[in-house]
Length: 305
Image 1: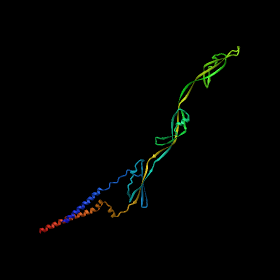
Image 2: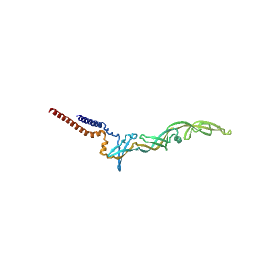
Image 3: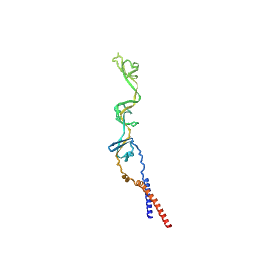
Image 4: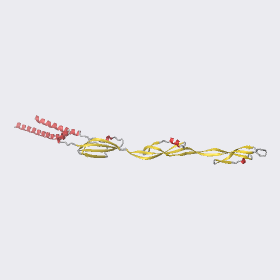
């Protein structure tokens, strides 16, 4: 009877080990594979003999952290792959164009040497659409125009001398004269008497006449200078960065059935071998119970006889 109880206890212990192993297997199952945040725009696979090479190409915006690129080992079609290199290639493209920028400045004079001293030889420029560069002054483009005018009036005069006059009378003098294209009017006269030389010749008179008038002129109040700067501007069209993750692959070694058993986890071993053991233990329990009842029944018949 003691042996029977020992067998029953062993069967129960084996059963508990099997169920505990199954529970451990469910608890230690690997987490689901995470999905990458970025995906390659191109995958190139090549093979040389038994070895393969996979290149995964990613395009990231400038400033994006490349740490998001998947670089872990993986298996594919019977090959195991490991990261060999992570290559970076700047995809920045530029566009250039000729540009002319016109500027205006104020000047108090129209003297070209003074104007050139006020103009910069070159200028840095950035346009609204992102083009930037250095432009140089074109001296032939410089023009100077009066910014405005002002009028002024002044007095002008001219002196005329009229000798040999018979009398000191202004009626003998012209009432106006022309000087530099302007008509001037008689303003003042001074007389000088010239003796005749003897008692029979009368004296003569010399008149010094002053003619005067006004003259108007117009002068510039200032000048506006216009100049052009020319040169080549450049703009960055694209700032993408190309990353290539290079993986080297080798064929996976075929595993023997025994090696597979050894490589299995304790939970997997419990599932593979525990279920048959559980069946055997259950059969032993049932057999033990039947034997126990048979012995008890036979003992009862013996004492009844």
